[in-house]
Length: 259
Image (cartoon, rainbow, N blue to C red; front, top):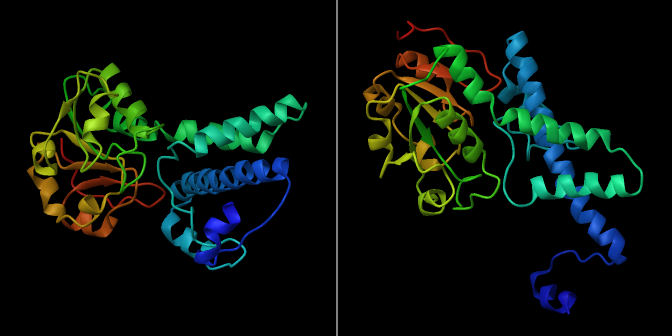
């Protein structure tokens, strides 16, 4: 039946046994999750040696054995598939007395990655009690309102626990987010409103609206300080605009620090 339905699309059809088919699904998502955690670990090393993870990923991806997809450093994966399938495959392995160390490491790296922006925020401010922190992007990826396993859930809750005033904006996922995130959060109707009077901004989802905006918009903040979890902007441009900018796996360009 599935073969008949998909025949008009001219897509490859691979027939196998049920157990192998299920394993293909788990293994595929686990492998893609592994690529994401791997490039995030490379980003950590890049920051320590002064390399640029975007250039590293571009060079790696030119090797056809590796490819460019899912080599995008950031704040980890979310959604319904990768977290569920990696954990399920680890459990499946455990059920047959096999310790899947590599995949356990992938999950651990991703969990650590989800709090990196909060850690860097605290390194910069030491305390964010009473400060207004803007969160841009709530869905686990752009072009969806899906909040399942979204990093924004962990980050906003951490900010609230640290006694910050949190203001959020997402172009699509706001309605879903309001039923999930902490009730102390303020939701803005647009990016400009979200940034007004803000002490720092965190970018969690790489929406086109954020990537294509004139970065002058950040100058209206109380302090133009941006922690970009998705590497949306060129550090050189942000430095030229005198915006204090922290990205993932790329050298920071010093500017006159805003007190």
